[in-house]
Image (tube, rainbow, N blue to C red):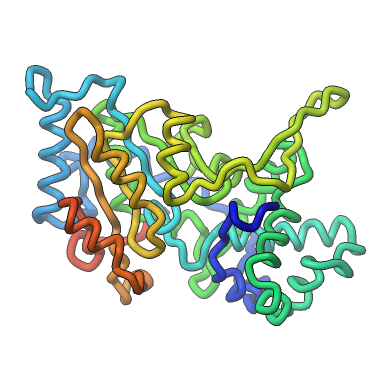
Amino acid sequence: MKKKAFIIPVLILLFISCKKSEIHSTSTDTIDSTTTVATSPDPLPSWNDGTLKKDIIAYVEKVTKEGSPDFIPVESRIATFDNDGTLWSEKPLPQELFAFYQVEQMVKANPELAKKQPFKAVVEKDKAYFEKGGMKAIIELVGATHTGMTEDEFENSIKAFFAQAKVPGRNVPLKQIRYQPQLELLNYLRANGFKTFIVSGGTVEVIRGISADFYGIPKEQVVGTSFKYKYDPEKNVIIRESDLSHFDDKEGKPVAIQLHIGQRPAFACGNEGGEGDLAMLKFSQGNKYPSFQLIVNHNDSIRETYYQEKSNLSLNTAAKNKWHVVDMKKDWKKVFSDN
């Protein structure tokens, strides 16, 4: 795997010390709260009444009203959302938890793997291995646990993981780290003719495994970091290889949007924290139709996790370009989904 192409946040080191009991459970959660909000008289009930909520509703109303000078045809109503830190919490990062789950399952099937790196480091909770190896060691782990299998096999692993996984420290299903206000926003946009896409730096295969269940977004509307594929004609299957095809972050996001969607989004939403969504929002702002850019600011240390960019680049860019910013403490009545 090419180092320069793929960056996994070093938060992965944190989870080496997590107990298995914190990550796994036998309970499942199959209730999806994303399908009930659009019929409410208030389309955004988990958003506090204020300027941002009014601006969102005003934008949707003006671009969907026929005869309005701001009207956007249905085929051009494209909305793109980052995933980590935008639709669900990224601390801890679910894909990192999945990598550890994969190690556990792969070692169980083949105990000899526990003697080889990077599996050995995970099994023995060897932080020093990852600290010394840095990004190269982390990339090696992701490549070892996310590739070399058919798509059906990998999707089955994803579904098994998300059916059982619990959030370390909170002991709730991963479905409950979805942001309830964002679920409502997705539904509100769809109820008004918008086609919603996830455009994430996470690997596309992981997100496709849960996008319909978690967000009501079909897998074909997921854009993400992707590995190279090869076709096995004898078995008639697709195999994912360890080299990356595309890293879907920063400037890579507009490229992936053009490749997979073919047009600029009219509505684009990302988050402050890693500077990864700015290019997508700038790309959206170049739309020939009226556009709306939104950034989630993680400033609520009580209900979520407080973190900010040292550069403050995302918030500075938002102010410069007059983008909208979610003040999580002020704008969201509640943060997480109950279901």
